[in-house]
Image (cartoon, rainbow over all chains, first blue to last red; front, side, top):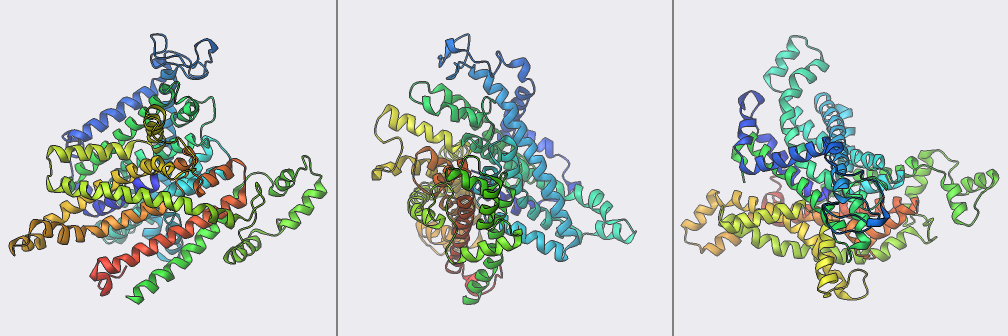
Length: 301
Length: 314
């Protein structure tokens, strides 16, 4: 679902980013976020799920991959609070461990996307010229595609695995960030503090890292938080198709896939993983909106 | 105006070439030897090194990458995307045969999405902060957050398994399109409602709206004729992006509902490591997406007089 959902929030965020004040004049972003009702709800959801993911070994009542033929497709009971799947594995334990994988892969993918996108965008915007032209043509090509389709093709050609899915998504998704970052750098390049640094003979790399980055990064981070939900949907979607996490790994999208055959007889196999994905994505979407509003209260909608 | 359209067309050429390079490059990152694969698919389980070498020569794989790319591209522009390893059929023909199914599904879904989103977005903006607005916003949030593959099964569970009103999957009869279209429409409606609402909120505070009201226009004319008309540029842009993504194949939803479009076809091809089909699919959908983008750009000419008059150079 990225491709579509994320692109229009991106377009909004890009427009928003232009309106953002420089870093020095927004002291209370965190305070503003904490005063934002739905933003706080999002923050709480994300923090709770992240804690569950971190504490998975302590929280999970059972081994998520332990097969038990005697309790296949059992309905919820004290023994297995959310029931068991077609191999008798405890669904709750698989969900808890799945949080680790789903958040972990999405987080790692986001980090890679940000690093590549921000890095290349800064270089393109700062140096301009042929390199800029070339990079932006590549960005044009990548943005011409619905992200899911290209990520699917890349992951598909590489063969099913969580790593293929990550490579597919990162290859496609950095382009958005590079474009936004380039615009930010182009605007900031003409500002006085950059000229001053140049005039005093500071090296390019240092100007980029010490002077430009801190000023242009915040709107990019808001953008990233808005995109996290879409990223999770794409990763779990590709896993659902069977391209990502392979059995018996407890991953939410893959769990949904496992439950397909039992939709009539044991709907809990599909209900709970889908609910887990939805809740996390709602959390990130609320948090992203809250952060955007916190950076600029005028943009509240 | 013609200059504007010509400029947009000219801009598409390098992007299309980029897409073709990308599609071709997929074969370079693929693990395994396609020649061996073709032989195995042809029934030779353990091909001898001589057979593999001969097949590599036959497929042109002994040539360097750039030479192969130029050959592949020059066949592609003549309508030859090679043959599927899996079925042996011409790739372009297979895609073209399945595309109408995908197009029907995409058009129904987007139309349905717009029919929900535009009225809801307008009402939401007009009665800002009302309980109706709150409800619409929560609906849009949930609609955008629920994974399509889960929504699809919830709909199957309700309409096919419990109520037995609609068929689960396939494309045997017209009503088969309802559930996949509904799944995709809900996702589209969610983001379009949100967009319509914020675009309308932006327009409703503009001076021209006040002027229109001041000169005594009926409220309906102010909203539909003036505010919505101006909000339409943003709505058309996002609708175009959404439509392009669906025309490129709603891979997940087509797979779930066994809807025989290009999305399901490419997923089947992926699991059979059918590289020529995957490559052809990327070039095919890339071309369609560019054409949809071009249509959206041309529609600005009609929607926004500033484009027509050349005031905005984009």
